[in-house]
Amino acid sequence: MTLEIDRLTVTIGGRRVVDDLSLELPAGRRLGLIGESGSGKSLTTLAVLGLLPAGAEATGSIRLDGRELVGLPDRELARLRGRVVGTVFQDPRTSLDPVMTVGRQISEPLRLHEGLSRREARARAVEAAAEVGLPEPEQIVDRWPHQLSGGQRQRVVIATALITRPALLLADEPTTALDVTTQAEVLALFGRLVDERGAALLFVTHDLAVLSRVADDALVLSHGRVVERGPVARLLQAPEHPVTRGLVEATRATTWRAS
Amino acid sequence: MSRGRGTLAGVLRRPAGAAAVAWLGLVAACALVSRVWTPLDPFTTDPYSAWAPPSAAHWAGTDAVGRDIASYLMAATGTTVVVAVSAGLVALVVGLGLAALGSLTARWVRDSVAVLIDVLVAFPTLLVAMALAAAFGGSLAVVVVAAGVGYGVTIARVSRAEIRRVLREDYVTAARAAGLGQLAVLRRHLLPNIAPVLVVQLSLAMATSILAEAGLSFLGYGASAETASWGRLLSDLQRYLGVHPWTVVWPGLAITLTVLALNLLGDAIRDAADPRLRTRTPVPTPEVTS
Image (cartoon, rainbow over the protein chains, first blue to last red):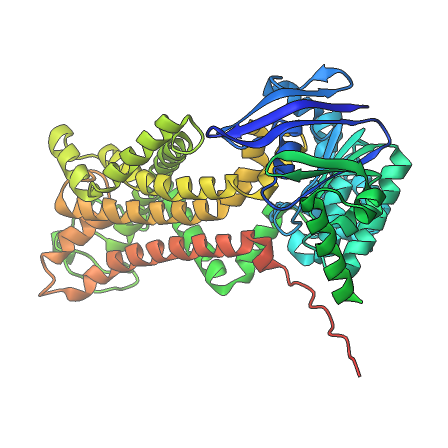
């Protein structure tokens, strides 16, 4: 599964919030999309999903194994979402439905795309919960989101995204809302699962330190434009663009404070 | 545990909820039983036993023409149940329909519907009902339509705001990203999340329609003379309020308790249906540091 984005431009009310973005992400590779808030990185993932907010318009080309996604009817896109493309959102406090049990949430894409019965879906949800390291998977699938800690909730979100074994995984700042220790655990889990499945990963973040643990290469975005691209290690050691330098400085500052 | 069964258990665990269920159960049972049996015939007059005090023969006494008040109250329960349930249904359909049009459609449609809702909210329900009754003659159907539409508009306003709030939530985007179509999102995530508010509004609509029926029948615009109604009984008895004040207590109590029970039940269901209120969150043990 290869994701190719070619000259993607997203406009909201005439303003270009993503400007002429191109990237290629082959199967098994991990690509980071890094930039300050408002740089258009989240909108890029929403554009891939075909879930841009009302009023936003995408032009250019997004291809999944050669299949053009821009302009594809919503029904066709819905068949790809959750099955071929898994998504992990930023804030596990708000991305889980508060009145749906954890297990039903995890198995929702399965029930939808594979038409499993409630019993089968529950069994698969228990397996998935165990796989992402949730404690007492048999019991936890019957709990409600508010009964779980932030880290556990994000594990639920990850389990939901991975349960259909998607070939492409989009992660929009999946560790930003977590504390540092949990962040490290979730990142390690994430890296391991992506490796095991050989999925392609598009990882959006504003934190180079986080990115250096999961991604091989990265694109630096600023005001919707790609200002620098290259291996993450190189970006960290020898940043060229002022924006990248700013991000590296920010990383050093937090690392220094943490130690 | 399924959410529905958990909710029912939660309602019954709350004293107010259990009391409301008990009273409404009694009302429903009276309505059913009164179809086939009442202690005495509710419409038979007996001038010789007018204004009889409560006794074994007349549980709640008799009125000016010697009708048995208890039997009449029981027979009128059916009217109340029919009005409350049908007005509630009308209100729900009107309310959800308008709310959906006002939130899920193209921008110009939903903006116009929002204005329409605000205009309709401004119409006083009772006056509209009286105008309808003046035009088409008083009947329970007029009461049901007027109260249903009147309260439906309020439901529309409240649920439109709720729908818009829920649709902005991250879990809706997450559900779409999991591959759910727009209809599936409405069914699986939107409805369950606005249901608690809907239940409260529905219980208020039913309670209000009982009051509207009583009020309109009291004023002579509601139930016809052949139909037993709590409001009509109240209206008949209040003329003698100075002489026999205790008789009005019975229909008054029936109306008050039923309206109160509906309000309490709505609140109990809302509280019990929210898993955040129903289940106790495990409190993490604070770590002891030296």
